[in-house]
Image (cartoon, rainbow, N blue to C red; front, top):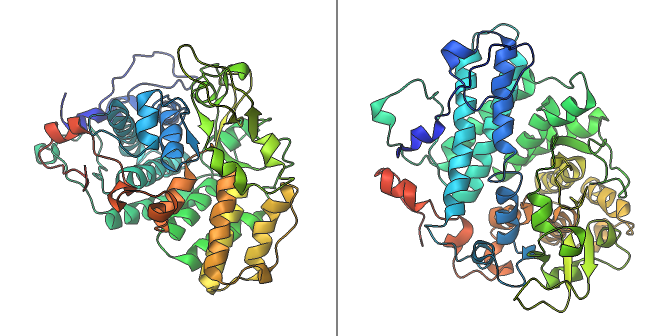
Length: 454
């Protein structure tokens, strides 16, 4: 079907045995959610959509890392990677559509779950978990595309007046995200029965971290600082030894990571060099290696230099290449979990919020930065090392880039939210701060409009 709300539709696989929750490709709220076991299967279906090639298992990560200039395709192939890296994305690009449609498929599942379990006793935690997931998806959609349709109704409620949905202003979407996260923070548990579940499902700590980040984007620095301070004071998370980061799943630094239980490939294959089992199509932008100080342990724990790299068939090879090796268990077979939120990023966001809230380079903010620097084997900074607040914020942005490279594209989002992308990345226009709305959606929905410049 061609109408955007029908992207939400997915079909129920009949299942007589609901003793063990099984992820469903679709849920019919009124007929399927007969009990909390069935409801949990509906929530798992949302996670299943996130753990897909189109979203967090590859395309969502790769696209935004390429936009931020952290990685690039040395041989200018495949074309979608090169187009994204050079900010020349066609409106007809398949990846533009699949990313959009995959997010809305997951949002549709979330809306159906929320509708189906709203009055179900014992499903409060599942309700909070679903609110968190929907908030995350809208946050990502908005950061990637700009204004997007805010759809909150389940697909079972068919309203012909809402078939052709319009784009919703970001201010309204942010309001809904905050509303969802505040309730998720209350309803989600602090922990689950197992470590894998505690790290792999939404907790109140994941909700607090996302809410703290959203407040930072909104310029609500006091609220952001307060929310992130709650995570720090909980003492539930640590800055783990760098040798364990991305080597062991569900470590104490992890706040939320998607649990990968089968060798599905994708992100490993895309990022790793050929001699480590990857495709050898992506490398770290060479100039970025200069951002690391001598002795920075991340140069050998997060990155791998290959000189010269293997040459793909019938393609010229660069003289050297450095790859992100954060995900490399079983070489190119994806058995690494995907760490979406970790304590290191929490402290860096906390440092920025604290400094901006004080409108000064405070000792507290610098100490939060130093927690990441000292883990990397570097000397701590002092408040006097920064001429002013702007210099400190710039250093935080670089530190986030050094620490989070190859993860979830935070460099691109940071540069856009601080309006530095135009200068730092030498963009042709600030219209490129968002990617195009898919052509297919514009053809099928007369109420959608294209982003300026596309």
